[in-house]
Amino acid sequence: MIFLILWLFILGTILLVYLYYPFLKSNQAFPEIDPVEELKQTLAIEREQSYTALADLDEDFETGKLSIQDYQKMRAELLQETANIVSQLEAAADIDVESEIEKYKQQRQG
Image (cartoon, rainbow, N blue to C red; front, side, top):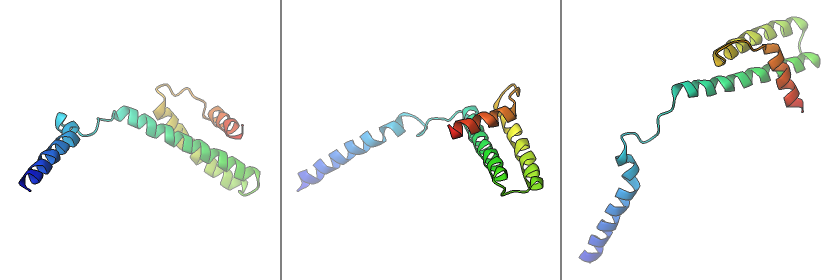
């Protein structure tokens, strides 16, 4: 009986060392994420969401769901937000937001 308990203790210790070795090896359990890359990914997601919102807004206007006043107001606000995101994402803000939106709508349809 004592040998069985001793054997289980030894196996348990070996198993714990094996499982926790990566944590003991380094001070960090998870690799460090580059904050610049994380910001780029976040901005790219926000840009995609803005393009989608603009495309949906254009579609809603074309189908008559929005009045011209509401459409113009909402589109101006979304374009400003999108331009801010794009200018943050790209070092040189030489991207024409309107042409980017048109490209996105064409990709979405095709």
